[in-house]
Image (cartoon, rainbow, N blue to C red; front, side, top):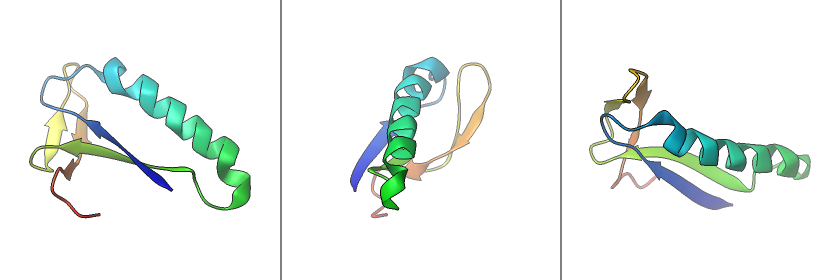
Length: 68
């Protein structure tokens, strides 16, 4: 399984990462017949805290140095 990380920051545009994130999600669903996803998708930030996007959506993220 490959790990894909999307780095977000306060004030980021949702469209900048949700489009590509959705592409990997669809790939996982199509690959899902094998029992394991092809990609592990993580939303990352520098500190691994809640991050608010430009339109106000707040996301929980993992820190850049998180080993998981």
